[in-house]
Length: 321
Length: 300
Image (cartoon, rainbow over all chains, first blue to last red; front, side, top):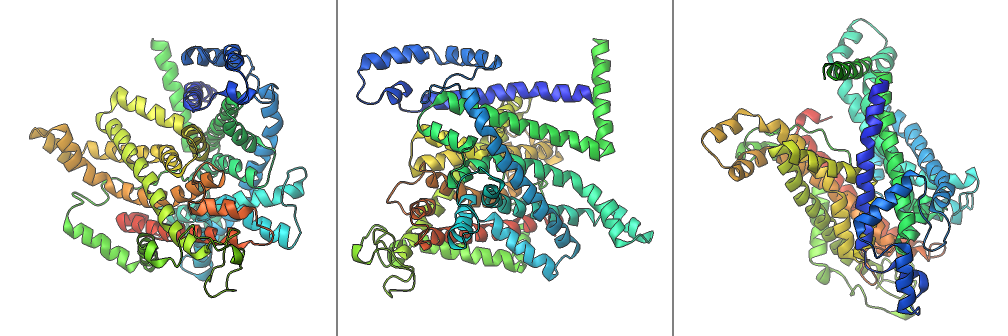
C-alpha cells in the first residue's frame, strides 16, 4: 500500500510539470507586455526594456521555465508583478477561503444529493422519485454564477437575511456555498440514483431479499456498500469541480479567495500569480484524486488486495532485475 | 463542465450503426420517452427562434428607446418582457441571444468533438507510444478545472465571443478523447475489424467504415450533454468579461450587464438566466433520452 501511494505521488510530478509548462506557454503567448502593464502606457521604451531584462522576460521561454521550476522547488513562487509582494504568501493567505468554499459546497452536495438520490432510487417512478429527478435536472441546467446572483437577490436584497458579499464569518459562507452546492447536489443526486438503481438489480440483492432480510438491511448492508465506490468517485470529481466553480462564484460574492485573485491577475497579466495559483489548484486536484483512490481501498477489500498484488508484483520484478 | 465520461459500452448499437433497423429501433425508443421528445420539441422551437430571430424579434437587439428604459416586464404592451437600462427590448435581446448562445455552444462542442475524436481516435487505434503521449497531454488538461483552463485560454486569446468558444472547446477536448479512445480500444480487437484487415483494408477505411460507426453512440450522447455545459461555460466567461462583448446579446453577457441593476431591476439578470436554464434543460432531457435509447442497458 505504501509503495502504491509513493508510486501515485511520484506520477503526479510529470502531470504537474506539464500543467505548469502548459500554463507558462499559454500565458506567454498572450498579447500585451507585463513590463508595459506595470509601468503604464506613458513609460519610455527604455524603462520598459530595462524592466523586461530585470524580470528575465527577454530570455528564451524554455530558460525562463526551467528557472521558474527551479525556484518553485525551493518554495519561491516569485514576486507579483503588480503588488511586488511574494506570490506564495499572497496565495497562501487566499487559499483557505477557496478551500473552505469548495469544502462547504461539497458538504452541502453530499448532505442534499446523497439521501435524495437514494430515496429516489428506492422509490423509482413514484412522486418521490420523479419530483427530485426533475428538480435535479433543472439544477444541473443552471449556471452556478446565476444561482449565486439569484440567492443574493432573494436572501440578501429582498429578505435581508444574509450578507451579499464577503467571506469573513460563517454567515458569509452560506450563500456562496449553496450557490455551488446546489448545482453539485443535483449532479450527485443523479449519479447516486443511477448507481443505486444499478446495484439493487444485482443478483446478490435478490439473494439477500430471498434470505428474508429486512429491506432496510438489504439497502444499508448490501446495496449502499456496493454503490459507494461510484458515488465516491463523483464526490471526488465534484470536489475538484467545486474548486473550479469557486473561481466564478468568488467573483459574484467578491470573496477574497484564490479564484478571484487569479482572475484579477489573469486580466492584469500578472504571470507569477497565475502560474502559482494554477500549481496550487492542480496539486489540490491531484491530492483529492489520490485520496479518493485510497478511500476505495478502505471501502472495498477487493481493491485493497489488488493494490497489494500490484506492490508484490513490483517487488518481485525489482528483485529479478 | 462534466468531465466524467459516461460508461457507455462501445458498439452498443451492434454493427453497423447505419443499419436502418437499428436506427429505427433507437428512434422508436426515443419516441416512447416523453421527456426526451419534450426536450427535442423545445430544442427545435428554440432553433427556429434562433434561425428566424430577425423575423420573430419585435425590435433589433441594439435598438434603443431611452424614454422607456428600465420598464419592468408586463408594464408596456410593446415591451412584454420590459426594457433594459438603455431602453433595449428584453424580449428581442433574448430572442437574438438564442441564436448567439446556441451557435456558440454548438461551435465549442463541435471543436471539442472534432479534436477529441481525432486525438482519442489516433491514440486508441494505433496505441503504443503515440497513444501514451496523447493521453498524458489529456491528463494534463484534466489536472485543472475546465473553467480555469477556459479562463486562461480565453485571456490569452483576448476577450470576445469567438475566443471564448475556442477556449471552452479546447477545455472539453479530453472528455471526447477519453470516450472515443475507450470505445475504440474495446472495438479494435473485434473479429470484424480483423476480417476487414485480412482483406487488406487500409487504416483510413478501417477507421471510417468499420471502427467509427461502432463508437459513435457514446460520442453522440456526450455531444448532446456537452452542448449544455458549453453554453453555461461560455456564459460564465462572458459574465467574467472574457466572452461576448457589448452589445452582443449573449445570455451570459446580459446577466453580467443586469448585475449592476440587481437591487431594483432584478429581471435584467433573471430573464437571461431563465433562458439559459430552459435551453440547457431541454438539451439535457434529450441527452438523457438519447443515452437511454442508445444503450438500453443503462436505462433506469
